[in-house]
Image 1: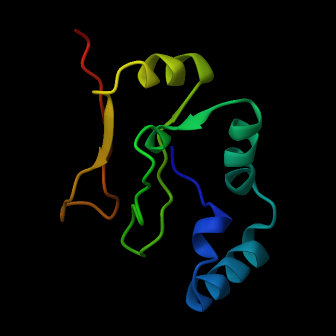
Image 2 (image 1 turned 60 degrees about the vertical axis):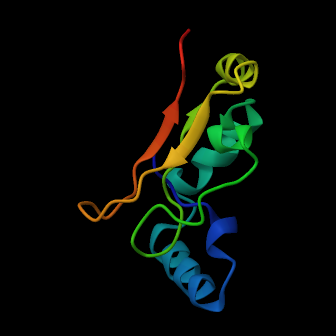
Length: 105
């Protein structure tokens, strides 16, 4: 899914101003609560598997796209080091595709 993560937007003064504008217009909407809600329930961002995260996933230079998995699936993936998440560079969309390659054999 995609959402806004205030921590990602708070890295620069430009993004801080954007974040303030978004908060003024949206308030504490579902999009801001989605990630904390999932994290509190043990869900994981699949990029935790490799320990590095995309710097951005959309043309504005922010990350708004996430691949979240439940705790059981995350454990399954941790046991398979060949399961690798990655970002696909593209010029045909305003969002970069996030992919999780999971070998089944």
